[in-house]
Image: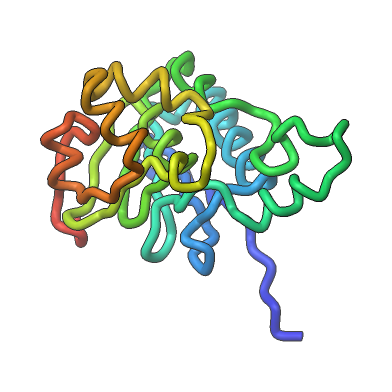
Length: 193
């Protein structure tokens, strides 16, 4: 019927020894789903096990890096029976903090919208680069949610407690340039770079 099914995450090992992992749901700004999460962590496992891979770069297809949890997945979670409401239905079976124990460096290349769970994922990477003008938000407070998935732990460590509280309580949108000033990204580059 004209619908093209594609993998929600792409994996490619480059000649340079870098594994390129790309969130591949550009029509949804790469919003996180259980399938995306499970495939993402599977690709990280493959990269860690591959002797030829020395580092991993994570990015997003299209205009977004990762716009957070897919709200359609969250709607499905709300209609699940109480025994199914452990969150894995919407986010997958693995947790973001696992990334902190991986032995190879993980670099986040943030190309656009980076919000909520997507921001958590980027913050768990070892190094973060952002395209000029990329937009960030914690998003949780505006959704009536607690600061979850590890963001309340990692954000104060990267940006300090006062900045973390500002961003978590306001859920305001800020650009890559401010993210650099706040210590959230290491470097801001031109979008084509």
